[in-house]
Length: 102
Length: 159
Image 1 (cartoon, each protein chain N blue to C red):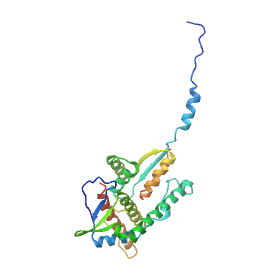
Image 2 (tube, rainbow over the protein chains, first blue to last red; image 1 turned 90 degrees about the vertical axis):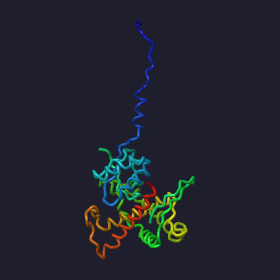
Image 3 (cartoon, rainbow over the protein chains, first blue to last red; image 1 turned 120 degrees about the horizontal axis):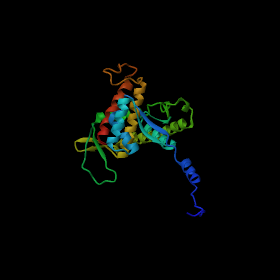
Image 4 (cartoon, one colour; image 1 turned 135 degrees about the vertical axis):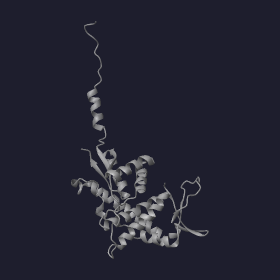
């Protein structure tokens, strides 16, 4: 075993990784739809399909969750995307808000 | 009013056709003339009270105001030239919509429905007799039911 060895080029992981974690988008904003007794179930399903591009089964699952439990967490997103979705949902007069994840 | 499912055509934007009688046509137009019903302050970006005066809240209100103006502009076009939407066919009257026009009408009707419900005091509609009809609330009650009825028929086309 040689006493000395050629210096090994160790990648500067500290420097490389830090910016990555800094740049990682903060997806800590929750888009929540709240129950109300006025919106038709078919309408809510349709709006989820249009706004999120979900298949009908997924949209219905969230609609039923809203109906049965009072709310549904629709997506966890960055601030900008969450805000965009809330604007879209409120454009359809659904009771949707964005909340900071605790 | 009834959705008439047509044969699937290779159109860039397929048309959605509804049979409608003249009484329903007049009721639909009268209901649409109520738009907008939802108050400006109805929209809230968050349940967190700290956001009430936030930039996000103001942006949401601006966005909703823009949408309302755009809906209003399109409604004015409809009222000026209803023949673009309501057409005579052999033996019947028809409402003919593109997919985009259907989405627009769904949004407008839902504003009227939710806004009327708010005007009625947000009653629990699943109760047997949620709202007692009075002279004061008759218009809101009628608008809520009519917009829901028209919305249900429009939704048949997207199922």
